[in-house]
Each structure stands twice: as C-alpha cells, then as structure tokens.
Length: 106
Image (cartoon, rainbow, N blue to C red; front, side, top):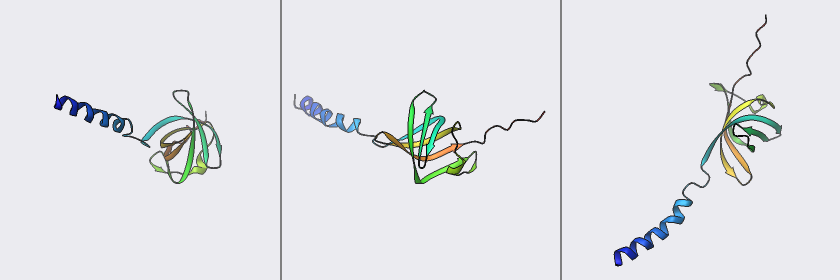
C-alpha cells in the first residue's frame, strides 16, 4: 500500500514537469513572406497560418548555402525559419531562402 501511495505521489509531481519540459523550444516554419516592416516579418506558413517573426541582432540569414542578408528579403519570397515563441510573435534564429528562379530568355 505504501508503494502505491508513493507511486501516485511521485507521478503527481512528475506530470506538471512533463508539460513544462520544452518551454521556448525551437520551431521550424516554412512559408511565404506576406509583409516586412523594419524588424518584423509576417509570413503565411504552408499550413495557412499567419505568423509574425521578430528579427533580432543574432538572427542569421542564409541564401542557399551562402551567407545572406535581411535586406534580401522581399514579400512573396519563400523562407524556412527556425524560431522560438515569444508571446504572439516568434523570434527568428535562422532564416533560409533561395534566390527566385531566373526566367530563361527565349
């Protein structure tokens, strides 16, 4: 009986810890830029969700395999982002994008 009581008590203490095990964990998002305003980027994800990304001084940008720049970002561009939650916005850690496909001259 004591073992059962101990097990129930231990489980009741463990359950809240499990639900808080990943606060601030990283999210991977893919989508299209809807708008850009200073250090805020609004994107529509592939799931149809609208997400606001905060660009921080530590945010890195990659254009394919090379280093990129925030100045390269334009509305309509497809991006992949690693970010953490911060209330209603997401803090972007890494932003990856590729150059738009060039149109071949015929």
